[in-house]
Every structure is written in C-alpha cells, then in structure tokens.
Image (cartoon, rainbow over all chains, first blue to last red; front, side, top):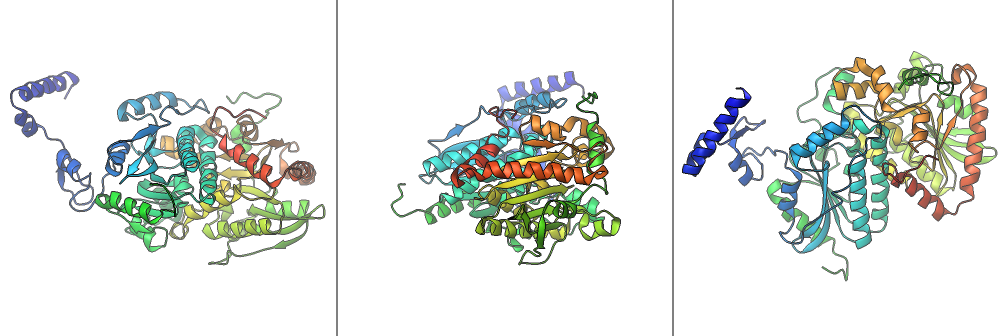
Length: 287
Length: 276
C-alpha cells in the first residue's frame, strides 16, 4: 500500500469514528501475536492484562507503564531526564539514530529514573526500556543509574532497578564499558552504607548490564521467561557449535542455578516489592 | 582517521594485530621479568582451577605484592590449556579470592589484562559469568590497598574490566582496550564480522585513544616493532612506571586512595573528565 492510500484510509477511519466509535474498534483493533502460544491478542486485552498473555508470556513493558504499575499514583517525580548521551567516538550516524529513538519512544534515553511511593514507602526506581537502543548502556544510562544510586544513598531510600538491556552501547565504545565500573562502584558504596537494593530482571538482560548492576542486588527478582545472561545465545552457539538447550539462560534456569531469589508474575510485582520494603524497615525508620 | 603521523605510525588495526601476536610477552613473562619469589595460588575454593587466569604473591623490589593476570600461551598447546585467555567464572572468583587476600595482608595489587573477553560457553553461563564479573567490579572499587592495572595485549569487554577497576591504568603502546572485540563489534552493528578493520578505526581502542579519553593514565612506549622485539626493554619501562605509581599511591591515606579511585570511575562518561 503506498503512502497516499494509507493516509486516505486513515482519514476514512477517523471519519467513521466520528459517526460511530464502535465502528472504529470493529474495523481496526490492532492485534499482537504471542510468540509463545501463537494466540492473537488485541491491544486493549493486552493492556488490561498488563501485557501478559493468558498463557503466561510476559511481553516487554515500557518504562513509564512500569512506573505506573508499581508506584502509588501521587508523588511520582522523574529525575535526571536531561542527562543525554555524548557521542564520544564521533560514531557515524549515532546522533541521528538517537534522535529517531527519542521520537519513536518518547523517551530521552534507555532508562527512566523516578522517585515515588510503594504503598506509602518512598523509593528510588530506575526502569530500563529495551525499545530505546535495545536498552543498551552508554554514558547517559550509566550516569542516570549512578545518580539514582547516589540519590538513594543520600536520602537513605531503598533502590529498585528494573533491567532490560542488550548490554553496553557499542556506539560509545570503551566509555560504555567503563559505566559498568562506575555503577558497580556506586552500588558497593551504597551497599556498605546499609542501603537496600532490589533488582527485577526483565526480558532481555544481557552483556554488561548482567555483568554489573543486574547481579549486585540484595534481593534479585525476575519476570518469568526472561532471557538473562552475559554472552548472548547466538555468540555462545557460534563459539561451541551446538544449539542451546530449551530454556537455557531463562529466568527459571537462573533460579535453578542459584542466581535469583524469586520469579514474580507481573500481576504480583507491586505486592512483592511492598512486602520486601516492609521486611527491610529498620528500627526507628520513618515511613 | 587513520592518517599516519610521526607520533602514530601504526593504524589501529595494525596495533590490534601486534597486541594479539602469540610471541608477545604474556603474563608469565611479566611475572618472571618484573618480580621475584613468585608463588602461584590456584583454585577458586568453590569449584576448580581455571588456568586462563594466573595469580599469586611475589616480591616487587623486595615488597610483597599480589599479581593477577589473564594467561595466554605462546604456542597452540599452551593456548588451548589456558583457553586463549578467556576465563570462566572460576577464574574471576579465584581473582576475587586473591584480591581479598591482598587487602587482608596490605599488599598492593598489580593486574595484567590480556584477553579477547570472558568465555562465552554453556557452563560459564550456568555458573554465573555475569555475577562473577560484577562481584569483581564492586570489590575492586573498594579495596584499601593501591591497585595498578597494565593492559599488555588485547583488553576485551567485561572480561578485561573484571581485573581492571584500579587506581591506575597503564597501557603498553600497542595494547588495545575496547567494549568488545572489533569482530564482535562489527557483528553487532553491521551483522558482518569481516568489517573488523573498519571497526578498529572507529572504536578508539588504542592506548593513545584511551589516554585522550582520560581512561588510561600512562602509555608505556614499546620498542620499534613491538614488545616481542625486545621484552627486556618493556620490562625495564614497566618496572620504572610501576615503581613510580606505587610510590605516589603509597603516600595517600587509605581514605584518599579509595575516594580518588571512586572519583576516577565516577567521572568516566561525564564532561568533567579531562585529559591528564
């Protein structure tokens, strides 16, 4: 379909919407196919189910929707949204690709940091979003997360991070690699000062993020079926020249090997976080 | 980009080739050339010994130090035995054990980086490659003894960084340090590993590049033709550089030492970073 006829169709759709809102829904409810069970799911049904298929498959959740899901409605403040990537290598096309990613996602980088409350308890939350450059960590992601850690440290608040990342961002080269050291150093300080850090690993969490802050939490949660590993499955297959076993590097596999405290269904995420915060209240701590 | 100047007579991919030469001095050579009385410590005390990392205690000008480095071989048999310098979690956990001992006994830590990356294998993943590397990053950031890292060959990815969160990062002139091997980089960005040479020229992975980015603290010159042409010259140059940095770091209080190290990594990737 060429551009003009698509545009005309859209206009016709809008016209019919004006006459009869139901007609619009009937004509065009977009669907997505569940990669696990093959079921066609309407977007509205998916949204109602928190982007979880009835078969249990967890679709990736965008960062702002995730914040909505776990934080109390009032008192949410986003932080450090102005920290932007720097093109250290003058990498061809990087600036343009960033611009496109910003427009396409409505995000300024691959992580959103916010403070808010979970059942009344104030927390600092950082949520990665795999739609933005595969959730890769460059200087801006590293800096935002480090500042989130330092903010939690200064105010003695619990820190919750949701990971979703393809690893270090190639376009920023060695500077991306060094973000692993930066975030890990900040977390180590925070930890030694008694700070509580909860991580929830979501699909996919790989590379430099796995080899740094994803694996340094006091409590490690994961969503079901998430791909979690250091090396990507394709790299491993190319190295060992065999196909990987079913379920390899999935949340359940990591739990079995002792790297995850609990796999949590998305519907229970908020309640689980709330419970963990209750369990870590210090004597005399203000609520 | 790859314009040759008197100060930079080699292209990045030529340096990469030098960094990967099998006859380039490896960690065993540096241990022999720089230290005396070396006692190798083996095993992670959990699972097994991983020969792709060499570690132990030695004397440096009469003073005990902990030495840890990626191990590569000079010939095929040796290379296979140490898995081409690609450690599994056991190697990183052995390194962690030795780092904690350096701290316990107040010994400076000297690490040598020379690896294409951590090994991407089934078992390595099942046993927590990511978790092992992460633990090293966190612990190295808080050690209260002086820590020095020398990138002697190829510094690849998180598998290199796991030995590299130190007070000072020195790089041999033809060593490289990058987020990923140029082949991996080209595969990820262009789905074409044959474009590695092009990747090399874009990645800013040479010692001088890292000094310009404020990540490498010193570039140690190599003899003409590369380190393998005259290992003794490299040992002498390194000996001098290591002594100098240890002396400087030894004058700092523990608190200042750890605070300075934190600042070093804290400012990477911010505009506060200046060329030193």
